[in-house]
Length: 214
Image (cartoon, rainbow, N blue to C red; front, side):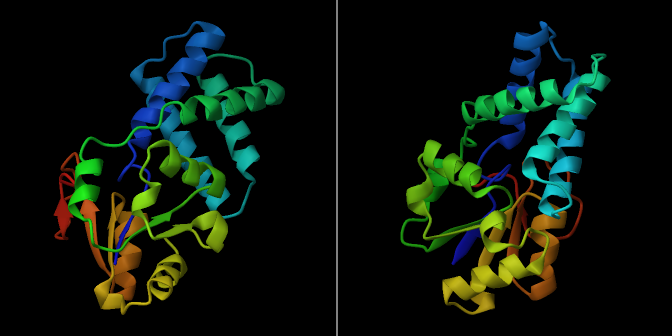
């Protein structure tokens, strides 16, 4: 059984995120975001989304807080109502921006006959929509999403659940992901085989890693 992470492993989430936030600020304020501003957005997005995954705040709160911080960073007045409206529009733009990495479809075709699955952090409705909109849902027998399981990576519990649902022994299960902290370390902790997708060749750890999926 081969499980995959979704965001930034199969789906180019960083590009989708950048495209969506640039659209919002250009349409709303006529502002063309610079690299520092888009980098700041990515930074606070990770911070508040982690708060959501650890159940410290709701999904709506993490979105609102991200836009409050971004408005302030870009020199605009902080306003909770406007921040929530911007987040709702941002979600719509994200849905129009989801794209697969170029190597994903060929890789999935090459694995025909293998049992495949997904282990992903996020909201069920959004993560499943990504699979549907990019036409790859059909390839996966088992789909595990943190909101549905009650466990979010890097908790080992979601990986144990993946092994359980596969019906296979843990040494027969492989996980492929892009993040050392949330994908690789928990697998190593429980003895699951894992592969790091290191598209930008930035990881110096002596682990099993690949630059491309195909």
